[in-house]
Image (cartoon, helix red, strand yellow):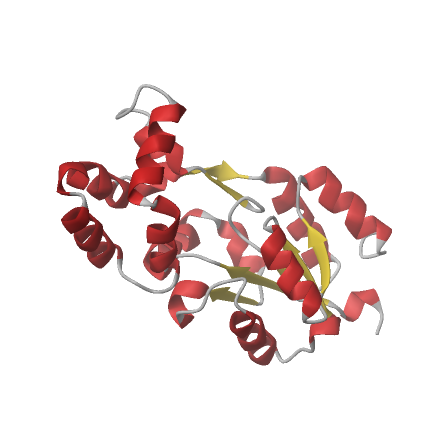
Length: 204
């Protein structure tokens, strides 16, 4: 199989678009250390992952607020002001997507994301229309690095793992993809991604 026939699968958060939940709380806390302590106390990462797995934000807020009633206004704020956590597009990566589309590569997106919040991203980012298909974890109640969501993706795009190049900023996600037979690129910056795409002759 030539590289041109390979499908290229992108992650979204911190590959194409910067996600920074700290931005939501800048007005509530004096510094990042205080936000860190808040996130640790409520186990923010695990709570947020449940929305990526398909739980509604309304349910997530209600459950966590019951556990931490003194923080209910802060928990609700993340739901109401969530768009502030999306800092902006990573323009260098977006430019590479346009280049790859122009070169006629099949392009896909596989992201851990709340389905209700990703609907807002579809409205915000025109470049998402360049992807042949988008697999959002919240729609399938599966998240990376669970192998099941990779298998679901391959079935949906009608590809074998070795026919795909998988790009993600999360090393556990990369390691799982690699173990399943995907060709992988661990994203660190647009410049590094472009260099790696040239190295494997996806870009000239």
